Every structure is written in C-alpha cells, then in structure tokens.
Image 1 (tube, rainbow, N blue to C red):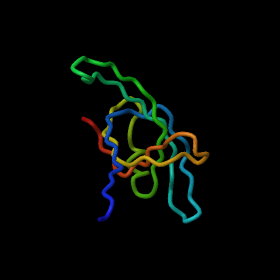
Image 2: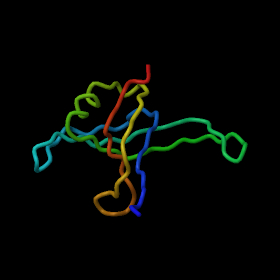
Image 3: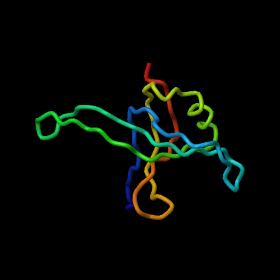
Image 4: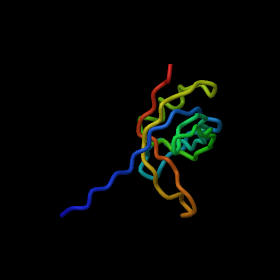
Length: 101
C-alpha cells in the first residue's frame, strides 16, 4: 500500500524582511523572506496567543506577486515546508500568495 503523506502550510502573515530578487542556477527568480504571523487560537479549549516569524522563499512566477505586496498588509501564504540549506530548521516554500483584503 502506498504511503499517504501531506506537506502543506497556509498562513496569514505579513512580510517583515524581503531580500533582493536573485536567480537560481536554472534561471528561476527567487526571493528570501521572513514572514510574521500573529493570532489567537484555541488549544485544549483555551485561547492561546501565537506570535511567530517564519523563514520563507518564493520561486518562479510567484516572485512577482511577492514583490507587489506591501510590508504593512496581511496576505494569505500557501506552500510547503522543507529543510533549510544547513539542515537546521525549516523554510516555507511559497507556492501561492494572495492579499488578505
């Protein structure tokens, strides 16, 4: 029986750091980001305040959408998690981003 696995992340956040556009060896545009998320959610029936920063990278056509976003506006970010280049932690690979207007 094939293994069923999922690796998907959807988060509402704003970017707080955005690097310059660079190009991969394959010629794809790429931009490194730090996303900031704040919310209140329920955990074990009690409200919990969540504040976090998350490293992210956008590749290909989604880079144009990222470049158009203001740093003070929230957006819905979708993607998947992968190990960082040094293997110590995770990075969100952004596959879609939409303004949270």
